[in-house]
Amino acid sequence: MSSGGNFEREVGSLHDPTSRVYSNGDSILRGLSESSADGVRSLMDAPFFARRVADGSLIDAKFVDVPDSGIEEWSHLVSHRRLPVISWPHEWSFSMLQDAALLQLDISLDALASGISLKDGTPYNVQFEGSKPIFIDVGSFDRVTTPKPWLGYRQYCDMFLDPLLVQAYTGLPARGVLRGSVRGLPAEITRKLLPSRAKFRWGVFTNVILHAWFSRRHKDDDSDVVTDISKAGFSPAIAKAQLQKLRKLVASLEWESGASVWSGYTDREHYEGDDLPIKAKFVSEVAASNPRDRVLDLGANDGYFSQCVRDAAAHVIAVDNDELVIDRLYKKLRSEGDTKITPLCIDLSDPGGGLGWMGTQRTSMIDRLRSDLVLALALIHHVVISDSVPIPMFLAMVKALGDEAVVEFPCEDDPKVIRLIRNKAGQATHPYSRAVFEVAAKEIFDIERVTELPSGTRVLYHLVVKK
Image (tube, rainbow, N blue to C red):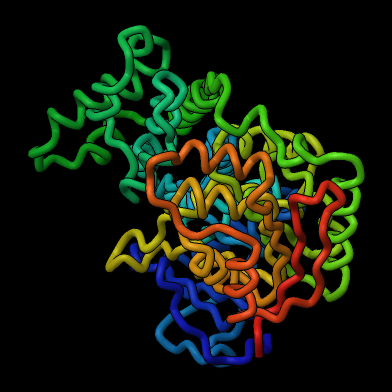
């Protein structure tokens, strides 16, 4: 393998002392201890490995020579392909987290049948390639010598099951829970949050109520519970039954979301006459004017314009702050088998990031989602007027996310702008006008192209960052 050297450790890879991830911008390498390398070989020899790599649900891995990498401290290295997008669980909708949870269990069942197991149960071991979840941590597989309970069970409950249960039964977003703590939601807190009607449902009582009781009882216990259970006659058949029951519970959960602020709205409702086809043509032409590895669609709503640029880019990231519209978009893309458009739920005014150890373990949106082209369509008036972000700062965000952009500016006399300003009556607001926008844009961008839509209240700009 020719790796190019200059590999640096990925900041998020630190908890497992037997495995570490490195990147040089183009290639991904994973350092492995002897024990982890043995687990990876067992994985590669397992019947499900080739099948899951082929269907895209498990990352491929190949052993490479240590001297070629410039990484000396590990006995073994495997290489992986680089995924087009890295996202975090607090950016996923309910259905995305649920599908990631099911994939974790399905791979655990495959591994169990092959005499290997997973060391952990964290959603950070899963990423999304378009609408398809993919398991990426081959270093978490371990050869089973003595049957024992799944070591990742508690972590799985804290980070998958319990957040999903709380959202399904109370509406409290799992995203908020996972953003609040990289450790997830403990069973004891879940027990207090769940309504009475949920606590005695099959699966919930076992995995939450009894789990919380067991954790309290053994909190200060020095005994080795896993070893004690193994000695008591734990078997692969028992482990399989537990995983299957857990899977049945997770698969049965539904988020009764009702309606949301944007779920009945598309940014096409208010276009008149030829506005929409002209806008779609403008966006498509800009996207096709240069090769695009990634296009970032901010305020994507139902993904209409993400799909307009789909053929012009290797990958599209569709971002919106409304979880319901992202969940619906994800399920639509999933039904179509789409692996090019990745939907993410992110509030641009409060995107999060800087989570985990030293605030660097889970990096920010700006660090991960920078793209060749940014779409900001029917968005700026919401951010500037509703969220009180000055126009120059909005444009600075666009620049931080890409060197080229299409921005739609609804003018002062646009009905949506008038309504937003009326809703802010009596409150101080930042200056909002086409003139202010163009002055701010010219400070950091070259304005390559301008098109006024026929209705007369909206303007499209093709912007390129000044060299």
